Image (tube, rainbow, N blue to C red; front, side, top):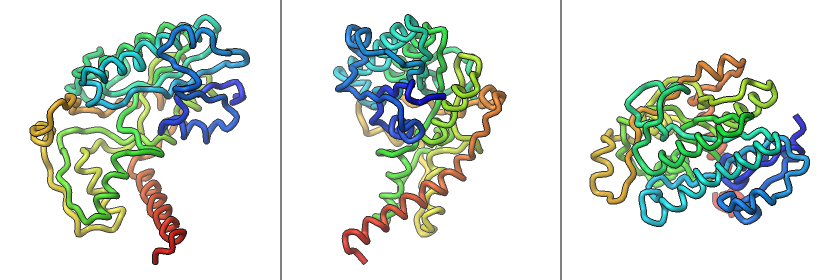
Length: 296
């Protein structure tokens, strides 16, 4: 596939940065260069030479989406913006790749299949479900449903590494179950579907491996850091957020059934294997930064 004929929308996020590494010759846009929420700007965009659009733009502030201002932005970006892209790409015969979320489900079933009915329990999930429906208007679409994305940006793994650096033994929820999805793995899933001309439609795409809780993942991170002296106290989602107002409801079961995308010939890496490499990379980067700053 000629990546010069590919457009990455929302190129500055965790996924967008990973996509740019995979497709160095792709055209890229951010919020300033292409406001997807403005139908006229999307329609009047220079679509010449573009054969594939990967939509990595999204409003991902799950709790912010529950606020008066946030819910408006979430609907604009996650639903209206996707509808604008789907309309523009469908008219021109352009393939649309759209990234979705486990939040389109209520988290009562496990694992989630591609055919499970929508049942979002918060505004963020509602807007993502609407975006899925909008993206499917383009007959040439790939919708990838993922969860717990880890990439180049603020994320759970970096937060736990930071806590370990401050010698903090945290309390972490143990009743939310799923798998990490590293941005590199998600990019490989997208690339595989495009390069193999897989059947258009919806695919679950996360890392492989055992389903685990956030508390279990934290213990694995601390083990990778060699911090056996730190402990992780289990807590429930309800207990953790009891004193926090305006918090969005979380689906408790986020494990995705990967059978469909595996049937296309894609091998997905175990999240624990990729976590090992990710933590090692973060430690190496921190050590290099200390050397550059003259810290022994």
